[in-house]
Length: 114
Ligand SMILES: [Ca+2]
Image (cartoon, rainbow, N blue to C red; front, side, top):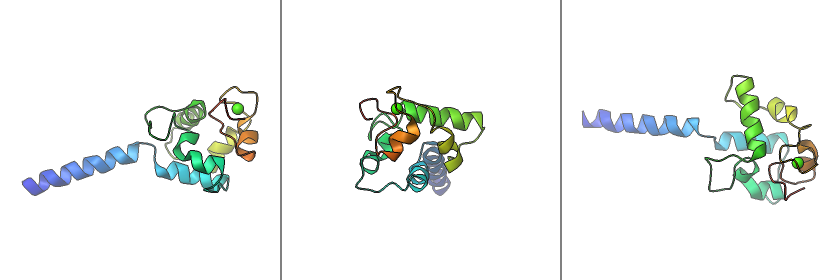
């Protein structure tokens, strides 16, 4: 009985981790745009889409548009196609399109970075 409880807790924890946005999403982004660890995008890491590196519950404007695009596709799996579909948008409204910001190693979810 005790062992079963331990297993249930572990399974729940794993499920919770899978539901949260995940290093897997960052991997897709990094692969799609060939992000180098020493670049601004590489250093921003999770903060490319999240409000900060430590505040994962909040998304920045770019992360919010990714979330919308995934919801529209009824999926939770981030793909290169989803990312590319957002390149012509200007998520943080700083006048520079997401695709151009990413190519220029700027943050598409931070209006102070363009
Ligand atoms: Ca922008």
